[in-house]
Length: 342
Image (cartoon, rainbow, N blue to C red):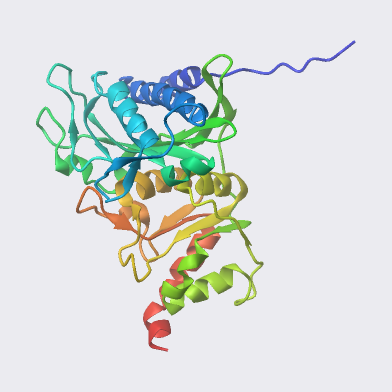
């Protein structure tokens, strides 16, 4: 007789409903935001899969607020998320890395009590060479009293996030999110169009295997940063060396390190004195996920989730991943003045 092991197939919708039942005070609005993000992710995933066949690859002639040339898929992803989210009555405003100001909810739709901040297609410069790209999102609760979301609602420290997540469009499409109750991953089954629970309760190893950093900037780093990288490589301090793995797509690098353990670093350099990654659209949401999985995230001196934003497109340096590896960065930079003066 053949023994068949029973397995439970859990869709993202079923999982969210079950999680919601654990909180009798829940109104269902946050769950609705997650459903809508999953829908937008499916639509973007479909376009990404067809990108090599359709007239969707390559850059447009316009630039985003960062001064970067927008990729065609960037614009599609941005518009898809806005249209999927603006009519549900759950949001009072949105903000995108691709747009200069707050995206208000149209007057014809009801406003809710949450704000959504997102990077519609992280790593889009890699689209033309078929490297995985992703979507990153963050949800905060409205704190002002008016109907529409205001700048004060957007500029909240990351510790006030009520949910965050990312979608990676790779060999498979995965959605990973947290609402402060652990981190859970769902893989899209294209044959049925459903995200299925594949990675429950993700925990990042306390000490990692991988170092993700762009070494081409080494000549523009200060001495403490160079010393830190020598430590990570086992050239100083007697540590076990980390293997260097760098894709150049934040979501892809972060996803690998979240599952396998490691640290992603984007230090300051002479060209980017304030760092390069965006606090509200990239650093905060991934930091929330990383901490919920047992990891850490720092700008080198401060916990990322404690930083008080002062503008919508603020940039920060970032060290994120396994806790011991991030702690090493903080310890190294605590002596920065001594090392710079040496």
